[in-house]
Length: 376
Image: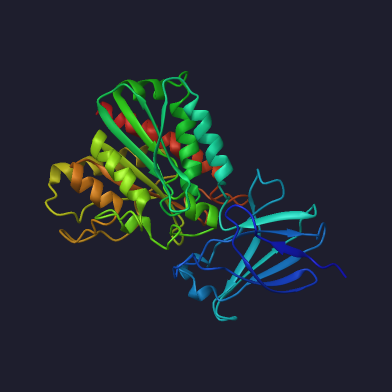
């Protein structure tokens, strides 16, 4: 009888094996270190070429966002390049909530993940390639608690200071796929959108704000369990040095426009979240955000405005969140871009659902919308 093997002792790996019986396994997701968050998983299954495997992930009702499991499909890859979907069902009443994945791999190794992983090795390749591009400056602006570098890229000659930063929540790997697409555009000097944007703007880019959580296989926190997107009011060296370094650099450069890139567990759509709750907000300030949102909505079918987060009441905005803090601190348009783990219901894709390829294209679309916003 075939006995599969399951392991996750690699970059961003996360799974606990409860039991294996032939080609069936009972599994559980490990919590982020020193945190109650759990949602990200990434593991490989060996030894079942041509046979259906059944993977049952238990206690999912106690995950960070149990609303993320209905109508969700796990991602699977046999070459770690192309990520498709595996047949996935969810029963909230079985063993504290059970996500069941069924898949018949063609080869003896198959990788499964919450979303297509973006490894730290790929991150270093992206940063090195960009740093070697024409007129791009690299700076190591900080160090994480695990001793990893916090990478920062800058380029452009214009007066408008544009900040793009991603992956405060490390399991939201959509964010760095988006960043890869945006950077490929911006460093391609044959691209007319890139040329115009670099003429009008100076870009400041942090492709991965949370390297420790990324490598550790966390959903939402860094090495000591800090949710970085709640640390922007007063970041501490021993808790959120990543945020402290980014905010210090922002104070040095100034910010005229900012995008913080994320993924959302439950909502099957791409949307923006703004800063309508910050103290002292004027209508002129909010209109800048609304105008960019309208341009992006018109430009790409992958974006919409019907679904999203509830609007925060006036004066109730949490200044520990980056979009609120940046908009308030610099008086500029700032926004959080959210992409789905599920499919994009407005433009579904049965083979991949929302995918790395579409994240990258959305990065380009957001830049084209920025150029139109600036021209307006």
